[in-house]
Length: 232
Image (cartoon, rainbow, N blue to C red):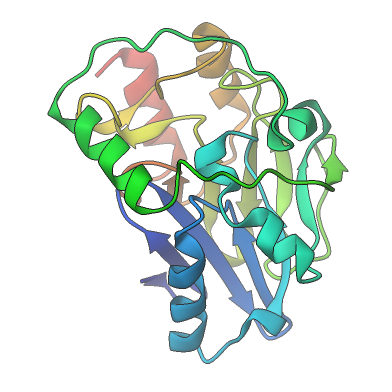
Protein backbone atom coordinates (compact mmCIF):
# COMPACT_ATOMS: atom_id res chain seq x y z
CA UNK A 1 0.00 0.00 0.00
CA UNK A 2 1.46 3.35 -1.03
CA UNK A 3 1.01 6.00 1.66
CA UNK A 4 2.94 8.69 -0.19
CA UNK A 5 5.65 8.76 -2.87
CA UNK A 6 8.44 6.37 -1.84
CA UNK A 7 6.59 5.41 1.37
CA UNK A 8 4.73 2.10 1.58
CA UNK A 9 3.06 -0.09 4.20
CA UNK A 10 2.52 -3.84 4.32
CA UNK A 11 0.23 -5.64 6.73
CA UNK A 12 -2.76 -3.79 8.18
CA UNK A 13 -3.97 -1.93 11.26
CA UNK A 14 -3.35 -5.03 13.39
CA UNK A 15 0.35 -5.44 12.50
CA UNK A 16 2.21 -3.21 10.06
CA UNK A 17 5.65 -2.85 8.49
CA UNK A 18 6.95 -0.09 6.24
CA UNK A 19 9.15 0.45 3.21
CA UNK A 20 11.16 3.52 2.21
CA UNK A 21 12.31 3.65 -1.41
CA UNK A 22 14.74 5.83 -3.28
CA UNK A 23 16.89 5.36 -6.41
CA UNK A 24 19.44 3.37 -4.39
CA UNK A 25 16.95 0.74 -3.18
CA UNK A 26 14.59 -0.01 -0.29
CA UNK A 27 14.81 0.15 3.50
CA UNK A 28 12.36 -2.05 5.41
CA UNK A 29 11.15 -0.92 8.86
CA UNK A 30 10.11 -3.86 11.08
CA UNK A 31 9.41 -7.41 9.94
CA UNK A 32 5.96 -8.07 11.36
CA UNK A 33 5.00 -11.73 11.44
CA UNK A 34 6.54 -14.55 9.36
CA UNK A 35 3.62 -14.56 6.91
CA UNK A 36 4.25 -10.92 6.03
CA UNK A 37 7.19 -12.09 3.91
CA UNK A 38 4.78 -12.88 1.09
CA UNK A 39 3.23 -9.42 1.47
CA UNK A 40 6.70 -7.88 1.29
CA UNK A 41 7.47 -9.63 -1.99
CA UNK A 42 4.10 -8.60 -3.44
CA UNK A 43 4.59 -4.95 -2.42
CA UNK A 44 8.09 -4.88 -3.87
CA UNK A 45 6.73 -6.23 -7.13
CA UNK A 46 4.07 -3.51 -7.18
CA UNK A 47 6.90 -1.00 -6.70
CA UNK A 48 8.87 -2.52 -9.61
CA UNK A 49 11.44 -3.70 -7.07
CA UNK A 50 12.77 -7.08 -5.97
CA UNK A 51 14.33 -8.51 -2.83
CA UNK A 52 17.71 -7.61 -4.32
CA UNK A 53 16.74 -3.94 -3.90
CA UNK A 54 16.33 -4.31 -0.11
CA UNK A 55 19.48 -2.78 1.39
CA UNK A 56 18.63 -3.07 5.07
CA UNK A 57 15.98 -3.95 7.67
CA UNK A 58 15.66 -1.83 10.82
CA UNK A 59 13.75 -3.24 13.79
CA UNK A 60 12.14 -0.79 16.19
CA UNK A 61 12.49 -3.42 18.94
CA UNK A 62 12.86 -7.14 19.42
CA UNK A 63 9.34 -8.46 20.06
CA UNK A 64 8.11 -11.44 18.06
CA UNK A 65 5.46 -9.49 16.13
CA UNK A 66 8.18 -7.22 14.75
CA UNK A 67 10.88 -9.86 14.10
CA UNK A 68 8.69 -11.98 11.75
CA UNK A 69 10.60 -12.41 8.49
CA UNK A 70 13.83 -10.75 9.71
CA UNK A 71 15.97 -13.88 9.85
CA UNK A 72 14.76 -14.88 6.40
CA UNK A 73 15.97 -11.58 4.98
CA UNK A 74 19.21 -11.75 6.96
CA UNK A 75 19.93 -15.25 5.62
CA UNK A 76 19.51 -13.79 2.14
CA UNK A 77 22.18 -11.18 2.79
CA UNK A 78 20.18 -8.23 4.14
CA UNK A 79 21.72 -6.61 7.25
CA UNK A 80 19.31 -6.36 10.19
CA UNK A 81 19.73 -3.38 12.52
CA UNK A 82 18.46 -3.18 16.10
CA UNK A 83 19.40 -1.30 19.26
CA UNK A 84 22.03 -3.13 21.29
CA UNK A 85 19.71 -3.23 24.32
CA UNK A 86 17.16 -5.28 22.35
CA UNK A 87 19.58 -7.54 20.47
CA UNK A 88 19.10 -10.43 22.91
CA UNK A 89 15.32 -10.00 22.78
CA UNK A 90 15.39 -10.28 18.96
CA UNK A 91 17.37 -13.51 19.30
CA UNK A 92 14.70 -15.07 21.51
CA UNK A 93 16.17 -14.01 24.84
CA UNK A 94 14.09 -13.24 27.94
CA UNK A 95 11.84 -10.20 28.25
CA UNK A 96 10.06 -8.78 31.28
CA UNK A 97 6.54 -10.00 32.01
CA UNK A 98 3.93 -7.30 31.49
CA UNK A 99 0.25 -7.42 32.51
CA UNK A 100 -2.29 -8.05 29.76
CA UNK A 101 -4.58 -5.24 30.90
CA UNK A 102 -8.15 -4.76 29.71
CA UNK A 103 -9.20 -6.94 26.78
CA UNK A 104 -12.05 -6.93 24.28
CA UNK A 105 -13.12 -8.60 21.05
CA UNK A 106 -10.08 -7.03 19.38
CA UNK A 107 -7.90 -9.31 21.50
CA UNK A 108 -9.28 -12.39 19.74
CA UNK A 109 -8.79 -10.68 16.39
CA UNK A 110 -5.18 -9.88 17.17
CA UNK A 111 -4.27 -13.41 18.21
CA UNK A 112 -6.25 -14.98 15.34
CA UNK A 113 -4.47 -12.75 12.84
CA UNK A 114 -1.11 -13.53 14.41
CA UNK A 115 -1.76 -17.26 14.06
CA UNK A 116 -2.80 -16.89 10.41
CA UNK A 117 0.43 -15.03 9.74
CA UNK A 118 2.66 -17.64 11.38
CA UNK A 119 3.03 -15.94 14.75
CA UNK A 120 3.27 -19.29 16.53
CA UNK A 121 6.37 -20.16 14.48
CA UNK A 122 8.73 -17.28 15.28
CA UNK A 123 12.21 -17.68 13.82
CA UNK A 124 14.51 -15.58 15.97
CA UNK A 125 17.51 -13.74 14.62
CA UNK A 126 20.97 -15.26 14.83
CA UNK A 127 22.98 -12.13 13.93
CA UNK A 128 22.26 -8.40 14.09
CA UNK A 129 23.96 -5.07 13.53
CA UNK A 130 23.75 -3.25 16.84
CA UNK A 131 22.67 0.39 17.10
CA UNK A 132 23.09 2.82 19.98
CA UNK A 133 20.90 5.77 19.00
CA UNK A 134 21.84 8.93 17.13
CA UNK A 135 23.13 7.19 14.00
CA UNK A 136 22.10 8.15 10.47
CA UNK A 137 22.38 4.98 8.44
CA UNK A 138 23.67 4.86 4.89
CA UNK A 139 20.46 3.25 3.66
CA UNK A 140 17.65 4.40 1.36
CA UNK A 141 15.85 7.33 2.97
CA UNK A 142 18.86 8.15 5.18
CA UNK A 143 17.09 6.89 8.32
CA UNK A 144 18.13 8.48 11.62
CA UNK A 145 17.93 6.39 14.79
CA UNK A 146 16.26 7.87 17.88
CA UNK A 147 16.41 6.08 21.23
CA UNK A 148 12.88 5.59 22.57
CA UNK A 149 13.19 3.42 25.69
CA UNK A 150 10.12 2.39 27.61
CA UNK A 151 8.21 -0.16 25.59
CA UNK A 152 11.48 -2.06 25.77
CA UNK A 153 14.92 -0.95 26.87
CA UNK A 154 16.12 -0.86 23.27
CA UNK A 155 13.06 0.55 21.55
CA UNK A 156 13.85 3.10 18.86
CA UNK A 157 12.10 5.40 16.44
CA UNK A 158 13.36 5.96 12.91
CA UNK A 159 13.13 9.38 11.28
CA UNK A 160 13.34 9.75 7.52
CA UNK A 161 13.03 13.37 6.36
CA UNK A 162 13.08 12.08 2.79
CA UNK A 163 9.53 10.76 3.26
CA UNK A 164 8.56 13.16 6.09
CA UNK A 165 7.91 10.24 8.43
CA UNK A 166 8.83 8.95 11.85
CA UNK A 167 8.39 5.22 12.46
CA UNK A 168 7.63 4.61 16.13
CA UNK A 169 7.21 0.84 16.49
CA UNK A 170 5.39 0.35 19.79
CA UNK A 171 6.50 3.67 21.23
CA UNK A 172 2.86 4.57 20.68
CA UNK A 173 -0.08 2.98 18.92
CA UNK A 174 -3.08 4.22 16.97
CA UNK A 175 -5.06 1.01 17.53
CA UNK A 176 -4.94 -0.82 20.83
CA UNK A 177 -4.47 -4.48 19.91
CA UNK A 178 -6.44 -5.68 22.95
CA UNK A 179 -9.37 -3.26 23.09
CA UNK A 180 -9.59 -1.99 19.51
CA UNK A 181 -9.58 1.65 20.67
CA UNK A 182 -8.27 3.92 17.92
CA UNK A 183 -6.28 7.13 17.96
CA UNK A 184 -2.80 7.94 19.35
CA UNK A 185 -2.34 6.24 22.73
CA UNK A 186 0.22 4.26 24.75
CA UNK A 187 0.84 0.73 23.50
CA UNK A 188 0.06 -2.33 25.65
CA UNK A 189 2.70 -4.86 26.75
CA UNK A 190 5.04 -1.99 27.62
CA UNK A 191 7.90 -2.68 30.06
CA UNK A 192 7.95 0.84 31.57
CA UNK A 193 4.80 2.80 30.64
CA UNK A 194 5.76 6.12 32.23
CA UNK A 195 9.21 6.05 30.67
CA UNK A 196 7.70 5.24 27.27
CA UNK A 197 5.51 8.34 27.41
CA UNK A 198 8.41 10.51 28.55
CA UNK A 199 10.54 9.24 25.66
CA UNK A 200 8.06 10.61 23.13
CA UNK A 201 9.53 14.07 23.77
CA UNK A 202 12.55 12.98 21.68
CA UNK A 203 10.48 12.49 18.52
CA UNK A 204 11.13 15.02 15.75
CA UNK A 205 8.31 16.70 13.91
CA UNK A 206 7.13 14.81 10.83
CA UNK A 207 3.83 14.66 8.97
CA UNK A 208 3.58 10.87 9.12
CA UNK A 209 3.67 9.05 12.46
CA UNK A 210 3.78 5.35 11.64
CA UNK A 211 3.20 2.76 14.40
CA UNK A 212 3.60 -0.99 14.36
CA UNK A 213 -0.08 -1.33 15.22
CA UNK A 214 -2.86 0.94 14.01
CA UNK A 215 -3.62 3.24 11.13
CA UNK A 216 -0.98 5.63 9.80
CA UNK A 217 -1.34 9.03 11.48
CA UNK A 218 -0.83 12.00 9.17
CA UNK A 219 -1.59 14.77 11.65
CA UNK A 220 2.02 15.29 12.68
CA UNK A 221 4.20 14.25 15.58
CA UNK A 222 3.23 17.08 17.91
CA UNK A 223 -0.49 16.30 17.65
CA UNK A 224 0.06 12.58 18.25
CA UNK A 225 2.24 13.16 21.30
CA UNK A 226 -0.10 15.81 22.70
CA UNK A 227 -3.05 13.42 22.48
CA UNK A 228 -1.14 10.84 24.51
CA UNK A 229 0.16 13.28 27.09
CA UNK A 230 -3.34 14.69 27.63
CA UNK A 231 -4.84 11.23 27.94
CA UNK A 232 -7.30 11.81 25.08
